[in-house]
Amino acid sequence: MREKTISILDSLSWNVQPEPGLVKGEYYREEGWFTPHPGGPKDFYGVMEAVWKNGSLQMVEFNEFNSPVYYIRKYQNANKRYSDYAFLQASRERTASTRVVLVNGMRHMEDQMLRENRLDGQFDLLTGASNSIRESMLVLAEKISRRLGTHSNGDYYGLARPVGGGITGRLQVVIENGRIVSCFYDEIFADSPDDIEEEELKPYYRQSKYYSLDYVSDYPCGFNALFDMWKEHVIECQDLLDLNGLRFSEGEFFRRAWGNYMKLAKEMWAELEKDCALKQTT
Image (tube, rainbow, N blue to C red; front, side):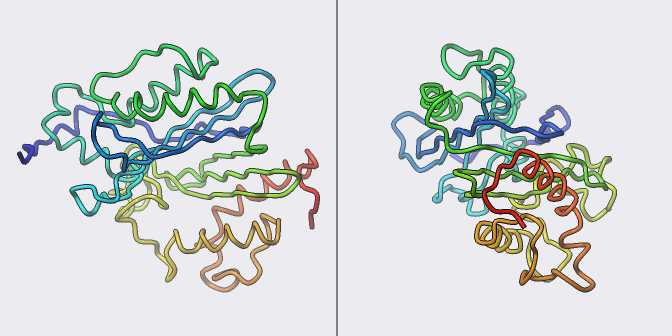
């Protein structure tokens, strides 16, 4: 049956902001297909990440990607945390009784794990935001827990800083054997539209530029396409500051396309050089 559409957005609150500052340590990642509904097809995808340093968890983050055959086409393969999927949940009758969305359940679990410095065992789950937590997040966390202190996926460097206008920049790099093997850059809009400076960007609050399903960048190449190209370029040249050959690396679009990123990249690069993290630097 078609679920009744309501509006309880004003009574809900959730936070998509990364913790500000620098995080670094051993990187652990587990991912895989699952079903949030026991007995259903395993066509949802969960990704669990953890950073561990000197016997202590530094970061825990779970992300879920929607089924490629989800009944609403817009949300097929969508990132449930950083798209507007939580707003869809806020329009569903079932959410009215629990007053929580999936992001609430993710943050609730992550906070417990960091506070108690563990990834396994019994945890308190939020009613109404627990299926994906139970069927994917805890399963993946248990796998990571058995590896903590050994068999990591590399060394993690993550940096989140406000870049102005109600936007947080986030740069993440993974290094293995002295080389960058993974990197990702995103910009996350504030949790409240009142905190976003530009009027046309206010509708994207509680979303990120990369994972938003509706955001349109103000330069001729989409945000995703630009930073997908950047990722391939960085892995090839092993330099966060080298933009040679990339689109908008000079001229009138440079500041708009790369200004925020470069603020974080310079700070990150200095940290990598200080730690002598890379075998080859320029």
